Image (cartoon, rainbow, N blue to C red; front, side, top):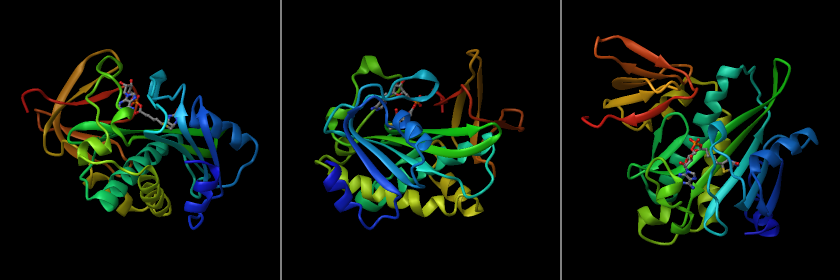
Amino acid sequence: MNQEILEKQLGDFPLGGIRYFDTIDSTNDRAMELIQQGVPDRYLVIANEQRKGRGRQGRTWFTPPESALAFSLIIYPKIAFQQENLIRMTGLGALAVCEGLKEAYQLHAKIKWPNDVLLDGKKVSGVLAEGHWIGEKLLAVIVGIGINVASDSVPGEDYIDFPATSISDSLGKPVNRMTVLKNVLSKLVFWEEKIAEPEFISTWQEYLAYMGEKVQIQHENETLQEGILIGIDNRGKLVLKTEYGEEAIFSVGEIHLRPSIDR
Ligand code: BT5
């Protein structure tokens, strides 16, 4: 993968531009700088390796060279966006990965709400959507996506807090990064245009992991809440049914979703 190959392979995609890096700290960080320089809508920042790939809340994302995809798509929202709508952009990234993997390899990936994509119940991809705000106004969104393509991209046990896998581990054969990239990008572009429509939410929900199963939500203060996962609401918030038959709704924050041990 290099700048020239990417420009050739992605020539038919409606992108505002492409910037490739052999090695970089974080594609999301670079995307933020490029927004300040005024790059156009749907500008793609992509790297072969990240030295300081970021997850949410200061966590790290492992991206060794040659074996993973790490990219950020800059999107200038076409509809009025507020802070709570950012969750849709996380859903957009996760949905694009699931549908891209289905299209390319007939794989059945699932979304562990809000931002993890699972294959065979293990994490294969993570999404980090970040907004660039000027006061109350959202100028741009960066949809950062990391995908484990080859086995070498899967971090060691001591690095992770949830089991991880790669596309090629799941398929049992080598996988081409460009094929994955093209399929995911085409779904990103497709769904970004429909992001405000109910169909976006319903399709996102179709890919939710643990639907109808007992799950645990761990709050920032370590308290646990259990319930049956019944879906997402029209804002993209997670909905559980508690043991008292009530609905409990969760926003993105410092919460962790886990399957219950006795499900
Ligand atoms: C995420 O955060 O899953 C979001 C990851 C987003 C990465 C992309 S790559 C392109 C763009 N540029 C960036 O700098 N970031 C984005 P979170 O849910 O907080 O999960 C982070 C946790 O996942 C870590 O604490 C590890 O436990 C685990 N982890 C790290 N690297 C992993 C990997 N390659 N595969 C599976 N799990 C990983």
